[in-house]
Length: 110
Image 1 (cartoon, helix red, strand yellow):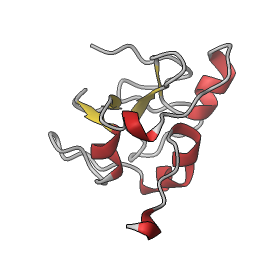
Image 2 (image 1 turned 120 degrees about the vertical axis):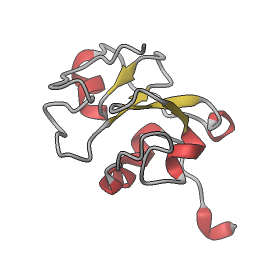
Image 3 (image 1 turned 90 degrees about the vertical axis):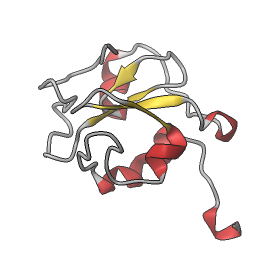
Image 4 (image 1 turned 45 degrees about the vertical axis):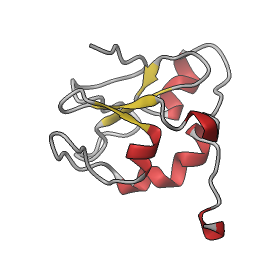
């Protein structure tokens, strides 16, 4: 089972910063290979600067569903709004923070 670091407030990986019913993922940070519920938790507790996942590592299983504990690749996470295993809905607002975790993809060039 993956340990989630940071300021978690429940077993589904919600934290003191983001704790809506949809805030149920943790992200493994590229800089330390540790799961955190959000960038703020990492910023406040990791003791080092965050690094984003490069595009060529988007097949890395770096997303943890806090509900069923399934790990998803970054590509899987970016292509869905729910867990493929337990169907728990993910917060679509997290897309506003993708640039803090993942190297940006220019989808307008596809």
